[in-house]
Image (cartoon, rainbow, N blue to C red; front, top):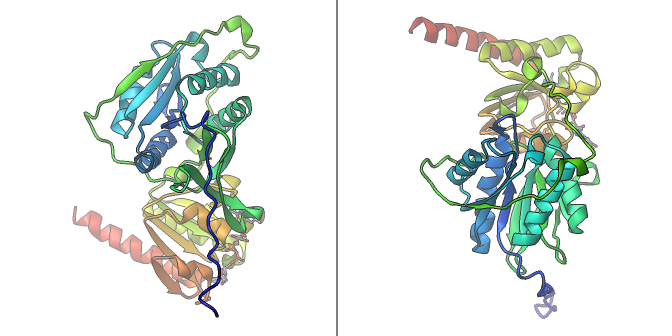
Length: 360
Ligand SMILES: Cc1cc2nc3c(=O)[nH]c(=O)nc-3n(C[C@H](O)[C@H](O)[C@H](O)COP(=O)(O)OP(=O)(O)OC[C@H]3O[C@@H](n4cnc5c(N)ncnc54)[C@H](O)[C@@H]3O)c2cc1C
C-alpha cells in the first residue's frame, strides 16, 4: 500500500459567534422531600472532569421553594465539586411540576448561558430535560453511558446505545447551545465528598404566578419502595441468566444472595420468562448497577446486559462455555455448570461466615 494516500482531515467546526459566549458546565440538582437524588452528585463528579477539560466552571442548579433546603443543597453541591450554584427559589417550585421547572431552568440558561447542561435520567430529569431542550430548541442526548469533550471543537461528545443496543454511538450538538445530556443513576462513579469545600451561590428569582400553572399537586403518596428490589444501590448482586435452564433452578441464585446479604438480579430472558420481576432486570432496558461484587451465573454477557453492570468493582462470571463473551470483561471466571457451582459457593460462604461470626 502506498504511503502517499491522502490523509482525511477532520473538519474544523466554527461555532456561531452568538453561541460562543455560552460557557460553563451545569448539573441539575434533583431533589424530592428534602433529599437530593444521588445521580446529581454522580453527575457533578463527571461534570468536574468536563469542566476541567474545557477550562470552565462547574455549576449546580437548585430549583426549590423558599425554606426548602435550597442553600443546604448548594453547599452539598460544593462538597461534590461544584464551583458555584444557581439557586432559584419560588413557592411555585415546592413540588416538581413541569411548567415552573421548565420556565425556571430556561430562564437561568438564557440569562447565564452554560455550554453543557446535565440531568439525571430519572423520571423527573427525563421529563424536565425533554421540555427544556424543546423550549430552548437545542439538542438532547438521552441515557448516555459516557461523556467527554471533543477538544477539536469544544463540543460535548455524548455516547449512548443505539440500534436496539447493538452499537454505541457518539452524538455531538454542534450548532446549538446548551448541549444537553441525561445519564442514568449509577452509570457514573460517585465522587468523593470534600467537607468544607466552598463556592458561590447566585440567587435568581422566578416571577411566576401560581394561577398561571395548570397542574396542581393535591397530595403526595409515596411509592412504597421498601418491598421493591433496590438494585442500583446494592453492594452485592447475584444475577442469574437463561443458562439456569428453568425457573426452579433460579432459586439457587436466591440461596447464594441470602447468604451474602445480596440483591438478586436477572438477565432479560429470565424476566421475560417470568422467573424474576422486571425490577430485577439488569441492563440497557433494565437497571444500571454499580455494586462492589457482581456474580453472574449462566449469563452470556451480551452488550445489552453488559452496559448495565460493567461498572461493578468486581465481576465473577460462572458459565459452562469458556468462550462466553462475559469472560472478556469479568474479573474472575469460573468455567463450569452453574447448577453445581452456585450451591457449592452458597455452602462455602455459609461456613465461612459462620466461622467469622463465631470468632466475633
Ligand atoms: C433492545 C434490547 C434491549 C435489551 N435489554 C436487555 C437488558 O436490559 N438486560 C439483558 O440482560 N438483556 C437485554 N437484552 C437481551 C440481550 O441481547 C441478551 O439476549 C440477553 O442478555 C441474554 O441473556 P442470557 O445471557 O441470560 O441468556 P443466553 O444468551 O441464552 O445465555 C445463557 C448463557 O448461559 C450459559 N449456560 C448455559 N447452561 C449453563 C450452565 N448449566 N451453567 C453455566 N452457564 C450456562 C451459556 O453458555 C450462555 O452463555 C436486550 C436486547 C435488546 C434487543
